[in-house]
Length: 395
Image (cartoon, rainbow, N blue to C red; front, side):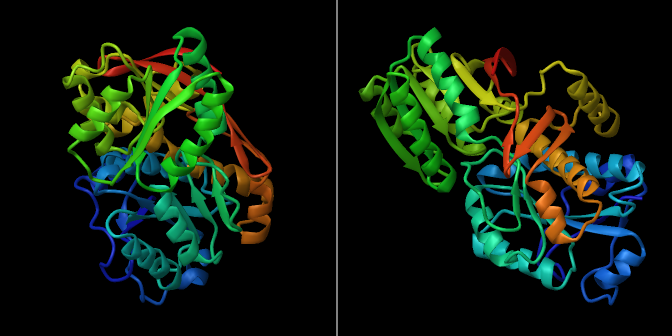
């Protein structure tokens, strides 16, 4: 049985997305868990062989575009693991929590989840600014798995990050565009928070090493949908490539405007946090010369991804939101936890975290290697082809 609850103490968290329980019921026998303060507690849950995982997924704001796919991916992984007998014999009890809205509210939700909802593990698929706040609120009391693409360098005790980082994701794509497309002049535009700030710092080095130059850079407030002045600056700078580190719906509005103002035909675009969900929002008419580098694309043909896509189709049907890289990372977060617990042969925090520093796990991307706490996976470079991607190089 897959149990699903809400997060944050007495309704302070998230009302489940429409259809969440219905989707869960298609995977397993779903039931609401009791709210906080029911007297059960962690010890009683362990006695019932339950492992309570609070999954912080964003359902509002610019990153909210990924919420439905992320919740589907987590539900699928939990159901598959429970069918195999759970993690070290403990059935996953998945608690969906909203990582959107004011960051201080999200931090309060995670503190309530740890203090009052007795969660055993926190998992997150949200922007890095939220990760920074959550790790402070958790204070190492429970392990925290951070799943999506991020800026790298996460070494906080108790935090396990498994997503792509600029060294593996951006550097080979920059080299390829320089060599194959003869790109020399780069313009960087990103959302105004920690992932674009630090990613751009690394990207500037890779561009310089490839023989190129950065002719402009700017950061855009989250939620900005008027890009006229940004596009005017890009046009004036005459870049060969615009590297885009905008998030979710903000990337949709920017890329639409970019194409509609006539820039797409003569200027390449390279996106670092784009997937099939965002591509659908941009629209087929607005994706000319748009490239993306990622560890996961739904179009990648492999045994692991074939199995994942087939399982998604069985569970959610053909009209479900496409599960791209951000959504799929929720699936891999639980597969990663399963592999780490199997290696440690315990869910006690200290040995679990020690085992997580060096491990190989398998998910929809295939094998992912964690070495000294840093994830390494195959990276694909893809070009937008209408409403889908076409893989053109693997690194």
